[in-house]
Length: 486
Ligand SMILES: Cc1ncc(COP(=O)(O)O)c(C=O)c1O
Image 1 (cartoon, rainbow, N blue to C red):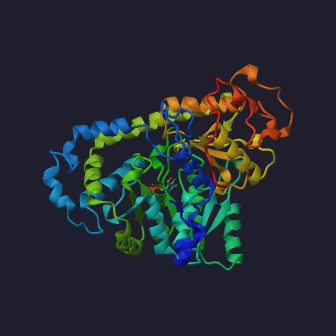
Image 2 (spheres, rainbow, N blue to C red):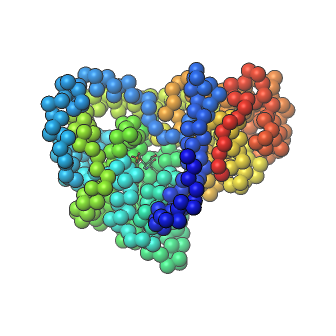
Image 3 (cartoon, protein in one colour):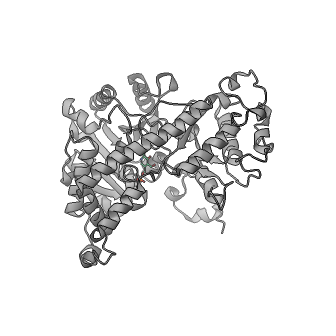
C-alpha cells in the first residue's frame, strides 16, 4: 500500500518536518536491502547488508547462557513463578536490581576504573530515546548543540526531529585523521553565535560512529575545558564503549572528570546495550547524568520510553553474572578484532585503505580515488553503483555529514564469515583485482591512482554494467533489481 504526501496535510508540523532524515541514502540503503536481501542459498545475488551497525558475532555465547539459566526468563517453566511479579505495572524508576546490575556493568566496561551510582541510572528506549530525552531536558526549541562530523545519521532524528534543537557540525577532516581540534570547536561555536542561536551543548560519540576511533585523554580533557569555559552541556554517547577490540583502551568521560576541574552538572552520558551486548531489539537505553535535576526530570520523561519489566528482569540476572560478563566481553572483543582484521586486510590487498581504528562495528573506507570528481554528487553516483551493481549496502560519507566526498562506512559485525568473503569477492571484482585476465589496462587518471578499475569512468553510469560484472563466473548479480530513491 502506498502513502502519498497528500495524506500529510492533516498532520502536525512536527510529524511532517524533514528532520527525521528518512529520505537520505543511509535509510535508502537499508530499504534496498529489505527489497532484495542476500541469502547464501535462497538469494545469492541479493544485496549484502553492510549498512547496519549490529553486533551479531557472539550470539552463541548469549544463547548458551540463556539455556543454562532458564529461571532468568519468566516465560519458561523454571521462571514462570516470577511472572506475576514482573508482569504487573512497574514505575519509571526501574527495578532496583536492574539499575544495580547496569551500573556495575557500566563500570566493568570502563575497566572498573570508575563506579556508577544505580540511583543515577535513568531508562530510555535505546540510546535513540536516551539522546532525545536529554535534549528535551537540556534545550528548548531553536537552541543548538554542536556535534563533531562525520556523525551517526540517526542523530538528526534523535536530537532534532521532535525537539526542534538545531545541530551545528564541528568539522573534522582526514588531514588529521578526523580528530576534533580546538579551532574547529571554536569555529562551530562562533557560527552558532553569529546566527544568534543559543548554544546549549556539545555532543560527542565516543567511540565514534562512523569512524571506529576513540578519543584520547588530551582531547577529552580539552573538550571538558571547552564546555566548562562556555558553560554549556557535554553529552557523551558511549554506546560503543565495549566494542574497543585493540589498544589503546577506551577512556570514558567519567574518568576524565575525576581529574579535570569542571562543573559536573554539565556532564551526561548516554549508554545502551544495543552494540556492546548486541541487543538492539531489547531497547535498553540509559541516561547517566551527574546533574540531580536532569536525573529527576529525565526519570519523569522516561515514562515515554521505559524498558519493559520483562527485559529488565532478564538483564538483571544476566548482568549480575560477573563471570559470564567477563568472558563475554573478552570473547566479543576478540571476535570483533578478528573480523575487523579479515575485512580491512582483504580491502588493503585490493588497494583500499580504511581509517586506522580500534573500535566499533564498522570501518571507514577511503574510496576517494574512485570518484569521478570530489563532489557529493560523484559520491552518490559511486554509491548507486555499489548498491545496484555490486549489491553491497555501504553508507556514503555525505549521509554522516562528512565534508570530504569519497568516504564510505562498511559494517562488518552483522554478517557471517561466508558473507564477508562474498562481499570481499564482489569488491575485488569491482576494483578489478579478482581475475587478472579480466582487468583492463589501468588508466592513469588521478581518480584511478590507487585502484586498478576494470572499467572506464564513463561507465559509472548505472545503466551500463562494467565488464567484470558481466562475467558468467562473477559473484556479482547480473540483473540488478534494486531501486533506490536518491
Ligand atoms: C552513536 C549511536 N547512538 C545511538 C544509536 C541508537 O542506538 P539504540 O539502538 O540503542 O537506540 C546508534 C545506533 O546505531 C548509534 O550508532
